[in-house]
Length: 336
Image (cartoon, rainbow, N blue to C red):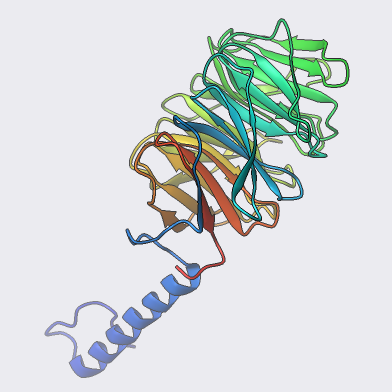
């Protein structure tokens, strides 16, 4: 037996203790390399998409990974060709900052939410339509997995559902705090999560009934919610600087991710559900191991609050939108 601590007078074999301690340090260094923790200030994005005149609040990949949508405080939505890094289209129609964007599951449409309206856009032609009667101050939008329903959470404390084909209202879910900041469908479409106040609520989108009591545990406003790809976990990001992982079946808190120095805004699961990305007021993007809660990558390349994050469909890239304007693309396959 050899002590791994600092050898003292009680240790009769100081030299051997020192060797073991040295081996331990090497093993820890090797572990860090395997995990891939990257916090160096010289870590640069693989690509920077510049074009918005103001900060970017939201980003979303098309299902085939070829197009990225970004919503900005400059009131526009931009579509980017990721093969070339070029802007392919700018969608004009909002009068106020765009707070959220989402691609339909088949990639044919883009939804955007703003403080002035909710709009649906044809991703190919760029033609848009305003969904009249939508709630004010829309903070979050999400398509159902089959693409038939669009959910929007807003400042009126309700989640409004829309029939995508007809553009008509399909229902409204009330019972929230004054504002709903985020919405997300479960992969099977049978549950709809919403972030409001310090809690996460889970609803049946077909009936509007609450499936379980609110998930409480955050100490500040919940700004983002996401279901894991298999639907067995639900994550929430909060201004309390943490991300929480919940079991949506039981409502129990499974894990807490701590490491951001300031409020958490956007979160996103990797397609295989193994990793979780987050953006924060601390100007960083972090990537976490879902099973252990360990922070495995940190990208510090932004100079302002990171509001939106998204994983590419192949899981190799994280896109992040920040208040400074450009969208950064981070290559997760690159050595840290």
